[in-house]
Amino acid sequence: MKNKKIVGVSISLILINMAAIMERADENLLPSVYKEVSEAFNASPSDLGYLTFIRNFVQGLCSPLAGVLVLNYDRPTVLAMGTFCWAFSTAAVGISVDFKQVAFWRALNGFGLAIVIPALQSFIADSYMDGVRGTGFGLLSLIGSLGGIGGGVLATVMAGQQYFGIEGWRCAFILMAILSAIIGFLVYLFVVDPRKTSIIQESSDRDSLIDRSPSSSSSIWSESWTAMKAVMRVHTFQIIVLQGIVGSLPWTAMVFFTMWFELIGFSHNSTAVLISLFAVGCAMGSLVGGLIADRLSRIYPHSGRTMCAQFSAFMGIPFSLFLLRVIPQSVDSYFAFAVTLFLMGLTISWNGSAVNAPMFAEVVPTKHRTMIYAFDRAFEGSFSSVAAPLVGILSEQMFGYDDTARASLPKALALSKGLLTMMAVPFGVCCLCYTPLYKYFRLDRENARMQSWKGTKPIDDL
Image 1 (spheres, one colour):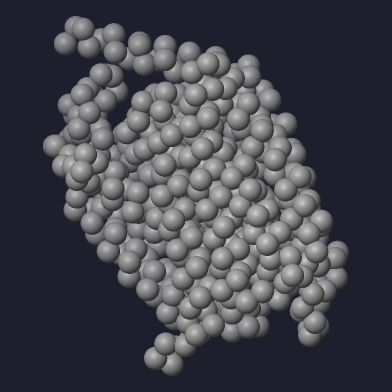
Image 2: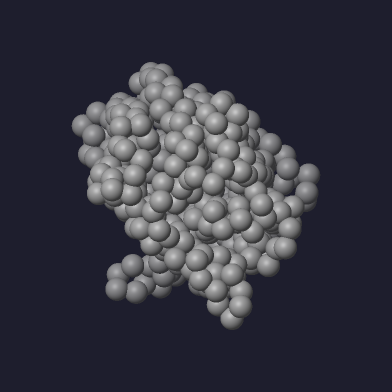
């Protein structure tokens, strides 16, 4: 099945990147309106943190399902299913009248994202060669971040308004759900799985195309179990998951940035600009990190990406301290916040696109790529989901956040201390956790290549 192109770029890649845009926009919606949701449902910071916890925990718990589905169905179908699921749940949040309803629909949202994200990552991994895969993932992250910026800005700006008598934050959720559903429909109709278009070079790919007869449920689960065991035994996977469990904590905690800036006294529009600058920095950093890591991996094939990962993780420590403790928490510090957020995003966002995703693609056979991305999301998402409620608990119980107080600056100070606790320390531990990759990445990559070579050997006898 031939993949059509527009201006030299395949329609499939265009739509996949549009799906990434909507996925990131959907992720940023709720954190951008935490203040309004808090007022609408009388929710404390720990309650808001539990909403993020529920979604991330369900997402992590259900991520392996993506690996099972992709072994037996085309990825465009799997992507469309996940997109429709998150679109429906996003619309449902917008019409919820009770906090428990919001929590339920956020859980369903996590289920949809659990299916989409690993399938997106394996799609990109199959679309780029080893030497440029970091750039490919960086480009996906850059384009997806545009959606994150758009979703965050849209929700923050609309939050303070009313449309046809409906609160603006609710309208933002409904609008995002409609756009997501449209993209999901287009993905289902027009995206072609790379496994259908690539020249068959490995027996695993050829076997998957030779035998497309319906599989029994027992054979499906047997094949899935075999893939799971193969992925879990890879040392590089174990190490990256370990660092990811710790390294994801700061990123989950950052959902409180919008609320923190508004408590300091910034308006909705000013807060939206600050969060957008951070998102732009992260987007550019993902691509820059991917380019640098690709270049270093050609010079130091066994250690280049690991060096990039440790640099990026380490930079989170000084930037967290400067942002949350050094800069005065006042509206007069707007320029200092803006510059710091941009530079922080530019340097701390390399790991996912420049290191983790490209490494995963090199240490397992092609047919197991979705499975390894799915299990990475399962472990990281489940464990890192505790960060958001912990920020709320620490702010309230340890640092004196008082939800009944009228003054907002003491609340901002308490929240910043909670944020710092969940950012600086995990960044440092994450940096150290990458160290064993200097030994094991080379061994796992050579082992994966040996497995691929053994798999292609019988082809000569066909």
